[in-house]
Image (cartoon, rainbow, N blue to C red; front, side):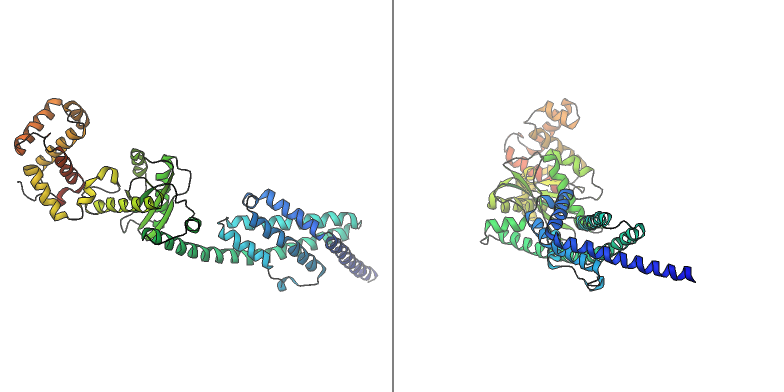
Length: 431
């Protein structure tokens, strides 16, 4: 019994010793509060890259670090219970700011783990010089670690919830604001260029390449809009574009986009072909021409719309790039298909028939005209013998009743309509 009582006395003595040494540590912390908080902020900004370059984030860290540290010390003294502590306003503001900056949530988690580690380390260093009783030191170390960890876990949980709520709300606000600005620009309504660029995250005083991207309904992608945005980014990559494309969802299957070309006023569309061939989900793309400034922003989008009008009536397999640079006058002629069909019949005569033989002749003539009227070049492009091309051109001229070099522009336009729109502008029966 004496041994038991002695044990009880020893336990009570140890508990008192633990309380006293922790109290001494927290009082020392109070005297050096700002200095310790500054060291914690320095560690956070040096170890978390997303914090380093943003002035506002550092301001919020400085505003909240001393407050958070003071609260932690009060918890260690048992002046306040952990479940009575809510995140400080600077801490909440930091979480909201990180969400608005699109800083990953892992950075916020990392910050509070570093805070926890910094506080525990400082307390343990103080403990080492304030207690020479091994039992008291061990118990105090456990108590400090337990309370600091519990405090950080509770606060971090609340702040992660704040972050996620602000991220969702911010994206909705930003999306609505961005959509409104794009609508104002396309609708030729007055805008303030500076605020518009800030809302869009996109510079308007440069060359733009407008795009419309879409996938056929029912293709089965889990995140179709995300896939379309990835497709736009993939198309920008081979062009060496430095800035981020501007992507605007229009519905769950369609997106508008603008590629920032800077001072570049031309685009090599041939670079797009390999990209589209590798896409898992078939995506079709209508592309305008490079245009500059706000007026160019509108114009290149309008051209992409014209190219898409061709895609909607084209008889070609998807996915495919429909570029206004290739389509030319075809895009304009799509506005009245009935008139286009009649015009094609007038220009091509018997060649406007929807049958394999006429299609072969149209293909030969189109390539012959595209290669500058060269039999040899057309033969190479068509993988045919030169004499076969000569024979076909003579046959075409017999059917047309004239030399193919006469009225060449009309022939080229009519052949492009047939190439892109197929049966939509061809006669059902032979001429």
